[in-house]
Length: 418
Ligand code: B12
Ligand code: SF4
Ligand code: SF4
Image (cartoon, rainbow, N blue to C red; front, side, top):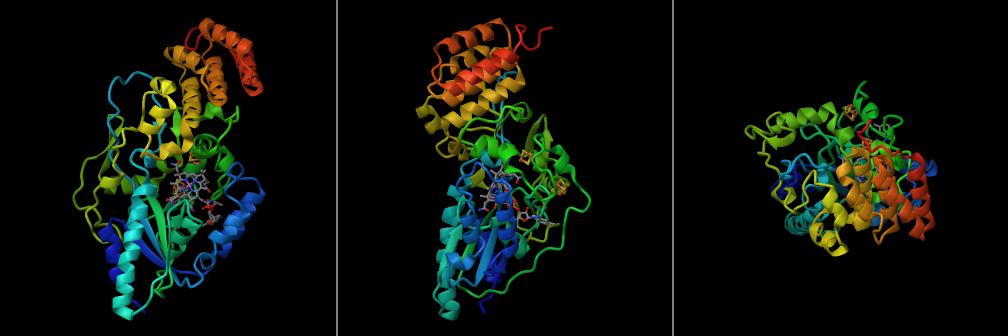
């Protein structure tokens, strides 16, 4: 059997922060749970997330018939909060931490390919073995969290994220399925105990029970995966979140310990690394000095809390250019502007009214409908007048309905006025 220590050492050298190994046995329990959740409609709206996908993604041998082992990898994505510039008093949105920097798929995939190249040489030199691999990060048909749990990389938190000793849940998961027979690690004996903080902190009640996520209510799904209209009753609960949601991770005590250990502090409302010495010492991981990954550092000009009003005038071309390297491109322009409208409706700053009136005439019906909702929330003569004249010229039934609803629920006094 091949020695696993050099494999793990190479994973760290490549920039992964944690690595464990498990067998290529099927993930029968995960499959059963996923299929049950699909059956109950908890994954509705993600048409790609099918029972057939669950079937394949829980059977490594369906993906690689010769599979023997899985190398489970984690890459921490704690970074400094980017400087979002001035002025601070205009309405701003919130982007979840994993999207402050470049798209992690683009960062991790080449590393997995490099890893597989190295592994091929290592297997040939040590044992004369021919290597077969399949590489996965997020989008592939693999149950990333179930692999990480069985490999002992971490344990399931009640918010369904994998928590690790030392890094909390602030890490991306990836895998290499291989035909090599490698000594497996054992699962960690840890759990959330009696804590239920995340369940109560979720603004949309998307965590009805421990370890159970109702995706259809999760802000991450609503802002990233959902292609159409956001359900009316959930919009007021979304605050200023415009891409993803970190709330159930931010409140987690395990994450707070990890952040402190890594020297991450919140100062003047911004998170920054204050101390970076001695990191790794209390962790089970080798004491390699943690630095926020250069590849994951915010540099794509996206920011963590962008000004919302200017986003409403982004053209398709400007959207593509600005978010070219960011995970945000997944929402497409219309999805992002839809989210921006909801955030502006929730923030209630009347300075957004002119831009929202402009968005009432956007080329995308989805944006027009959500701009109408936001104007209804803001209220006031100007907003009502704009809604009435938009109704007269609007041709899409769904947008007409949004405008009627907005008019029915609004008041002539703008938000903030008695
Ligand atoms: C679909 C998907 C989503 C969906 C649905 C999320 C979900 N919980 O299922 C949406 C769009 C909502 C989403 C959101 C997010 N996602 Co996502 N997502 C995925 C994806 C593609 C599949 C997940 C899946 O299989 N879901 C099906 C459900 C049923 O599986 P599950 O929640 O893991 O359920 C398990 C547990 O509940 C457990 N379980 C059930 N009952 C019990 C009982 C006990 C006692 C125990 C111990 C366990 C247990 O068993 C289940 C099966 O394994 C994975 C990538 C991948 N290929 O796996 C990324 C992935 C899970 N997402 C990830 C991330 C980062 C996020 C967000 C944080 C992004 C954000 N900031 O907005 C949020 C987190 C929301 C949340 N609280 O989970 C990371 C998670 C990393 C980690 N540390 O866990 C992954 C692994 C991507 C990656 N490769 O890094 N995501
Ligand atoms: S990501 Fe946000 S909306 Fe989704 S479960 Fe966590 S707190 Fe709730
Ligand atoms: S907040 Fe508490 S219950 Fe939720 S994942 Fe963290 S430790 Fe577990």
